[in-house]
Image (cartoon, rainbow, N blue to C red; front, side, top):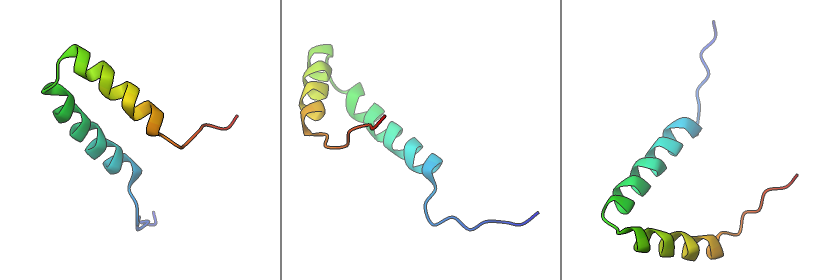
Length: 50
């Protein structure tokens, strides 16, 4: 079997982002979390295309 060298590991990246977000949210109250996602939702420019 041939080994593939990856320049970008999507699984590793996703795990890092999840851990980073979990750490940030663990220090917030429920109201702060809701406000955070409302704020972040408005800044996101990537839209899904169907």
